[in-house]
Structures are given as C-alpha cells and as structure tokens.
Length: 154
Image (tube, rainbow, N blue to C red; front, side, top):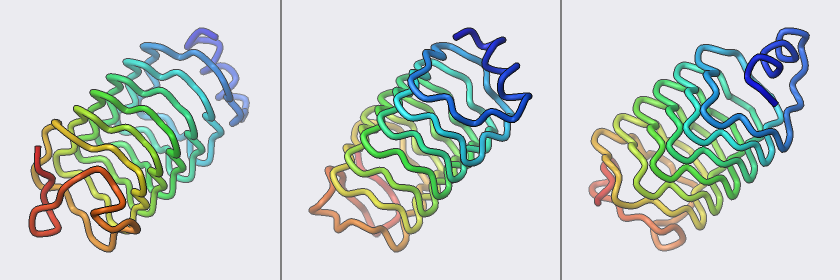
C-alpha cells in the first residue's frame, strides 16, 4: 500500500493496518492512537512526533525508523524489530517491549518508566539520559545492563 492510500484510509477513520508495507513512509505528526499495526513494515519510516499510544505494533518491523519524540506509551511492541531506530525523546511509559530487538537503537532521553522488557535486546546504541524507573523486568531477565538505574551501557 502506498503512503497516499494509507493516508486516505487513515483520514476516513480506519485504524486497522495489519500486514502493510509502509517502507520509508512519512507518517510524522499523525494521531495513530490505538491503531492496529500488527506485522507492519515501517523500515526507514518517519514517525517523528506521531501518537502511537495504545497502538498494537506486535511483530512490526521498524528497522532504521525515526521515532523521535513519538508517544508509544501503553503500546504493544512484542517481538518488534527496531534495529538502528531513532527513539530520541520517545515516551515508552507502560509499553510492552517483550522480546523486542532494540540493537543499535538511539535511546537518548527516552522514557522507559513502568515498561515491560522481558527478553528485550538493547545494545550498542546511543543512550544518554534514559529514564528507567519501575521496570517490569529484572535486569537479568532482559538483555541489557543498567548503570545506577538511569543510563544504559553500550
């Protein structure tokens, strides 16, 4: 589906976009709160300042996507692939990142408070100022390291 058709359907109020290929789509500044984006390919997509709170992104592919200042609070990102994505200043409060792959992901000033991280892979990305309070996975249950409960190590 082209970005143009996606936006036409979005403008009619459609929120079920399962299994679509939206590679390199510009979906910045949209309100996709509660949208079903299960298994959607958003590789290199621009999702800057998009409201994806309460969205279902299970099995979504977000390789190299720009999610700067995106709201992913309460979103389901189970098994999502975010390798090389930019999550700078993104809100992931109470999101489900179980088994998600965040390798080489930029996590500068990201809010992961109350986020479920069991089985999540986080490594080798830029990560200064990450807020990680009340995580719902113990550090030994996820594949990441914490320094003083606030900063991710490379």
